[in-house]
Length: 428
Image 1 (cartoon, helix red, strand yellow):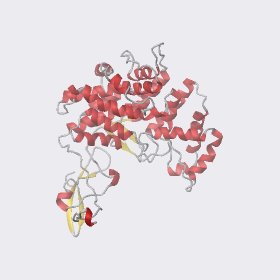
Image 2 (image 1 turned 45 degrees about the horizontal axis):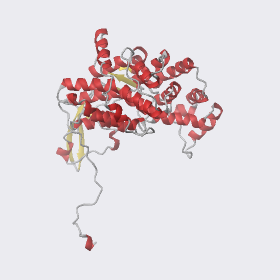
Image 3 (image 1 turned 30 degrees about the horizontal axis):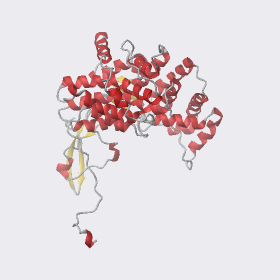
C-alpha cells in the first residue's frame, strides 16, 4: 500500500499523493495535504467521489447490488436475524451470543419510557403537525432532560445516550402518531419485542388489548433491519458533521432527522405510494409505463432504480417476499396493492426497464407494506428515522472514537466579486 501513489500535475509541477486501500471497495487517494502542497482544492459537489471518513460499519457495492453490515449480507440478516441483534452488531462490531443479546434487549427495554414532562411538550404542537417536525423537536429536546449522558468524551455517557436514543425513538414516533389522531398515549410494555412494543404503542388503545399480528411484526422488523444503516448517505453525513463540532448526541440525531425529512432522501416511499394511487387500477398501468418511457413527459415511475444501486437493490429482494406475506396475512383487497404487484411484474419483464436497469427498489415495496399495515403516509419518513437511529448512533460513536477525527469544514470554489471598497449610501 505504501508504494502506491497518485500523481497530480498543475502548471508543470508534479506532486505525489498516497493511495489508501480498504478491506474491499475502491482505493482512496489521500489528498489531506493537497491544499498545503499545491494551493488548490478539489471540486466535488455532493461529495460523490470523496471519502469523508474511515468506517468499518457498512459496505455498499452498487454495481453488484451488495449491502453488508459488518461484513454480513443484508439478505441473511433480514431473513435470519432481528432488529435488536442487528443493532447490537452495528454498535459493537460482532453478532452477540445468547447472553449478550438478552442483556442488550433488557437494557434497551429499560430505557423505552420518556420523561413525563415531555408529554406536555407534545401538546405545544398543532394537531396537524407533520410527525417529522414533532420528532425533530422532541429528539432535540432530549438533551434538556437527559443531560447526565451528554459528555461525549466519556465512553459510558456515549453508551448510555446511544441506548436511550435507540430505545426511546419508537416511543417518540408512536406518540407523534397518537397526538395527530387524538388518541391517548400508550406507555411502553417491556414484555414485548422492540417491534411489537412499537406496534402496540402506535395502534393500541387503553380500552382493549392489542393483538400483535405475527406477519405484521415480522414485516416491520424486516423494514427496520433494511433501513438500519446505509453508509455515508446525506442524513448520516449530517449526523457526523454535526458531531464533529462536539455537539451532544441528541442534537446530532435531531440534525439527521431534519436531513432525512427531505423528499430526495427519506420521502421516496411516500412518493411511490402516491404514484400507485395516481395510477389507481391495474388496467391503467400500460399507459403510465408508456408515459415513463416518453422523454417529453415529466412523469416518472417512483420506486424504480437507485442512485447507488446500478443493479437490483438487495433490500428490495427481501421486501418482494415480505409484501406478499403481509398482503396475504391481512387479506388486503385495496386495488392499489394489486397495482403494485402488477406494475412490478410488467416492469421486470419490459426490455426498456431491463436495459435501463430500473428495478424496483426498497421504497417501492416498503410504502405499500406500511400502508397495508395502517400507517398514514406522513408516518413513513418517521419510521425510516426510527430504524436509521441505530445506524446514526453507531456512525456517531465510530466518529467520536476516531483519534484522527476533525471538525468538518468543506471548502468552496468562490465565484463572487473580488475585493472592492465600500461606498457610502449617499454616493451610490
